[in-house]
Length: 142
Image (cartoon, rainbow, N blue to C red; front, side, top):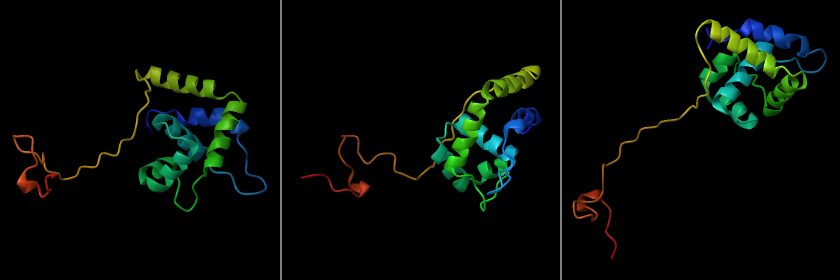
């Protein structure tokens, strides 16, 4: 995604509206919040699920440019989305992305992360007569 998302164009669009972090806690880098926002949309995460995924998934943290010591919480993620909505930036972002991808003959689609864990299991505990096989280690009822 680093090569197919126009990061500089998106940052330039959002930056005039992004808080500078003057007073209080320092703001998260705009690039990190933008990456978190896009991952949330790509993978369909809620705000709490996105926060949890950032803690649990190293690749997502690395993509966002974040370390474990400072992860945006669900409220920060929500506030970033509200900032985009308040200034009606979503349409402009979509236009920047689609234009950039269109120039390269690409399109953007949603995806889902699936945790496919393989486990070793017997193919069946039933024999040809549809009864539990004695070798299954299970006791047949009755």
